[in-house]
Image 1 (cartoon, rainbow, N blue to C red):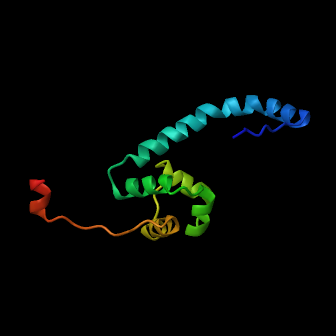
Image 2: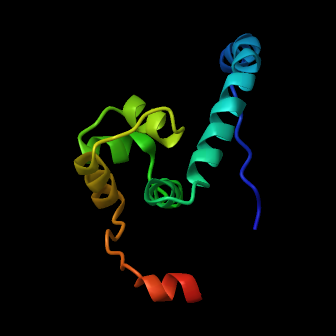
Image 3: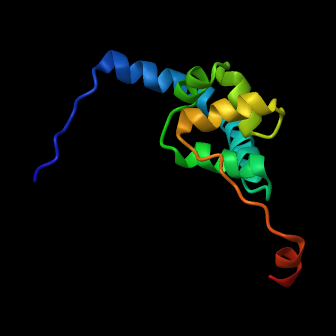
Length: 114
């Protein structure tokens, strides 16, 4: 198997080099957002589990947001833990990623003995 080499035009390379300072300036904010997303997804809650499912769905945020009938920015804010969403919106997000909304309730004796 051979690797296919692609060439970049000098103009495109100049554009990439010119945008590099902007990308570097955005990096700390993007790292902070990623940290918030990871923290929110690690929550031991129903919404934390749904956030994990969104991350592992393999779908892009705009695609999920469109299917759920919300703006991508709203979904991003929720994934970061910056916003809460109504239960019907959470249901639509679950449907958009094909997640099961089934859960079972443990009896009090099962919760205390296990």
